[in-house]
Amino acid sequence: MIEVVSAERCVACNQCVRVCPTNVFDKGADGIPVIARQDDCQTCYICEVYCPVDALYVAPFADPLEAPPSEKELADGGVLGSWREIIGWGKGRTTLAELDTTPFIDRILPKRGS
Image (cartoon, rainbow, N blue to C red; front, side):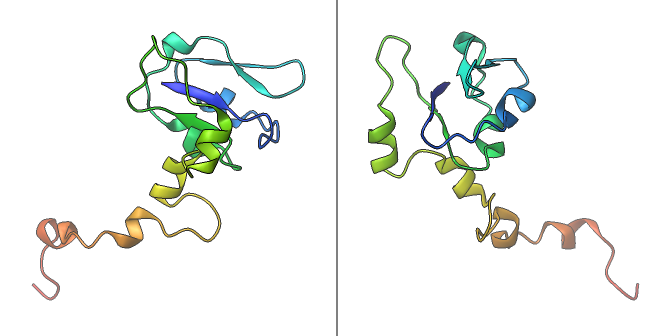
């Protein structure tokens, strides 16, 4: 579930507002997106992946009865925007596709010269 939009990191591009499939965000008066319909979040991570400045945090195991972690806790722990880093989105990052050594394509294509 979407837990944090970092006002400090956000550049008001509103990519998260545009890409969210369940319309969780609203554009704030100051341009910074706000979490308007958190219960509609499907924890798909699309917003976090598309955020160019790692200003979002989607919690994989959020408990609605607990307070979300603070932005400082997330930043200090290296968690803010971490999914984007894990999959390799962003300048200078290695994508998962580059790391994938699964010989899948060799199993479905005919051998060359056959």
